[in-house]
Amino acid sequence: MLYTLMHRDVKVMDVEMDEFANITALGKIYHAEHLPIGTYNKIGVDRKILNKWWMNRSIPASRQGIRDVLDTLDISSAQELIHKCFGLSLSDQYWISPVDAPLDWKSINFFDNDFSEDIGNVLFGKGKSSDSMSLFSPDNTANGNLKKKWKILNGKRVLVKGSSAPYHQEAYNEVIASMIAERLGIPHVTYGLINEHDEVCCYCENFITPETELVSAAYVMMAFKRRNEVSEYDFYIDCCEKLGIKDAREQMEKMLILDYLTVNEDRHLNNFGLIRNAVTLEWIGMAPIYDCGNSLWFNKIDSQINAEDDSNIKCPLWKKNPSGNLELVTDLSVFDISDLDGIENEIYDLLSQSEYLTQDRVDALCDAICTRMDMLDDIAQGIEPSESEDSGMTML
Ligand SMILES: Nc1ncnc2c1ncn2[C@@H]1O[C@H](COP(=O)(O)OP(=O)(O)OP(=O)(O)O)[C@@H](O)[C@H]1O
Ligand SMILES: [Mg+2]
Image (cartoon, rainbow, N blue to C red; front, side, top):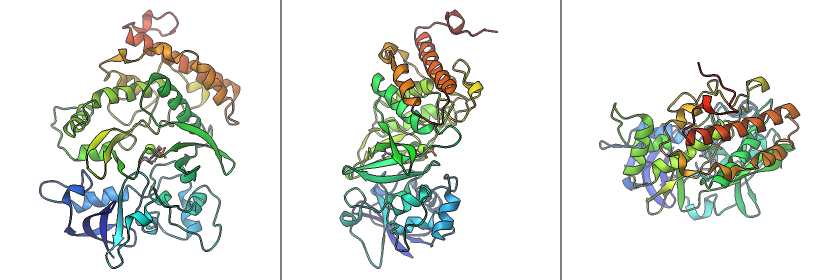
């Protein structure tokens, strides 16, 4: 079927797609400057890369409970769902308009128009509500592994995200990370807890507006060529600077510090990025920090909660673990750790609400967070771990 890839109300290029939303052929380019960054080079648009980028907006095969969803909807792949909402998303401004029956962005975009929660409810395991379900929803284009749904709460678009067994800690971790970031003045997405279908989930407001969009670090990096002698980390910062983001290093360092404190093990290339103005195409800056849930030993048994040694926490990017990534930070003096004084009491109260966390685990997590804060303070002051009175670490 023939579609026009659109950017808000701007025609970008014609594409041919199969029923699974794969881009099988490229057609006329109308506005090359609106092509998704990272999918083209001097020679032209790379169909395979454009297709991979487009597929990245489908629900991944690794999504919690996806098998049941496909069975319930009687479809063979989540990619088919992209067609149900013309690829419209609440995180960026790209979508597809059928060539033989063009659609008007203003009347269908999810920022200004209502959408159904039917598919979101199926994703939350609620089964089919009726045979006349509406699959017109931004849930079809929300990626990530945890089950999630968009909803309109008090007029605002919010993303509701579940957690995973056995500890169901991710939702709480999102809230903890945003509490820490708030106290330290790190630009972040604010998460709260919400009950969705009898499950404690986290929710956050959409940080994208009808005029802006999120571009993941993965595609920012695809737009440039890395020289062998430049590390991936420095390369990303170079890319941001080339796009005009002056404070990229400073913002990245804030993220690494937050990831160190929260022992984040999931900072992959789709979990941070840049915000661009989709109308003027101007690069605005780093996206506020989001997706910090896979942290604080979320899937580790209690005996593995060890703040002083994070060698069993594997990071997907740069160095092996959060301590290693902290070494990339050039300026640790940006924070006053005393701004976090007493936060462990708030974290204790929050974690104590969970029916999945034992008292021992809550205590261990609160102790570990305090130790992590002390360790960061020591490192910032140039104190070696062995010099610290209460680190308990033995240097070999
Ligand atoms: N507040 C938000 N506003 C707009 N878009 C968002 C927001 N939060 C997340 N997104 C988009 O939704 C995607 C999925 O969200 P998120 O990363 O939180 O899910 P996840 O399931 O925890 O992901 P992962 O598989 O990386 O653990 C993000 O990659 C981002 O593109
Ligand atoms: Mg994510």
